[in-house]
Image (cartoon, rainbow, N blue to C red; front, side, top):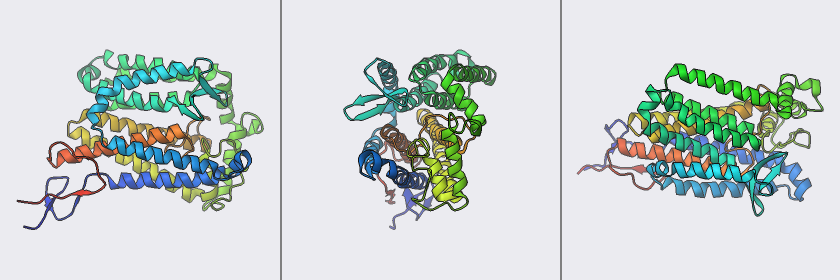
Length: 402
């Protein structure tokens, strides 16, 4: 008897069935590869000056990426249900670490913000772990309190209290950007879970006003807002970083100045290899490179949302909410970073997911993407009716008739 294969709709065909999303894999590989390329290009001048080694940041980013891939393959072997059980402990760990950072002498200050815990020569940015732990905990909460969330105001007031407490710790660092991404992701997840729309909109409005209030009462955040509205009026003061980013966009044109030919990365544009990596990309690769990068993010987020929807249709609600959360998080953070670089949003200290230089960001992003692959793998396995999922592998599954 000839081997046959069962597609995702249960029909018999001769086409092998992949137990992972090839389009998602293509988007991730594309972003990681482009990110390494731009980290090398944007950091080569500053690395030469600081360390007398032009590829210092590239080597470090490569090490972080390898570590992230190793962690990712480990995540692929963990059943999603285990994350549901571990989510409260991960949330408590995030609270604990965010509080520890604020202890004088423990947290490491960089550019006026205490966001890192020093472990030898390494620095761990706890807000990255906090964003992932909030997604996992909220996914678990939405499953456990599904009816209350959809019918009672208390259903989304309770997680909002937890979000408020974590936001206070993030503001103390301060890490305003991480707080905005975390809250926006959480509210998006609750909306998709079917919360009552009127109380939800009221609470959302209150949250937006609170965020605006936090922004205007702080002198440095207010300066960022005013410089964002008219950066050229204070070109060499609070608007310096944004004007240099806009110059990079202007120099890029349609096809860019060429890889490695950026002028702005030569000590004009601060944080060129981290928060403003996209500006260097726009300068060197032009509008074409910008559209390709945005297309890759749209593909990643779109496939992530599709994976979430498929899991939801299979009644795998924790997996669905987790996939929704991860997709929203990556999409929102990428959108905000690109908006900041292009001058359409106020300046915030947020990295470009899977691309910007940063060990904590790269590790957590790789773990989050691996969770997406695991969720997709489990859902496809269930659709095929094969029982408990086997270990994840980048191959297909063949079903032979007997």
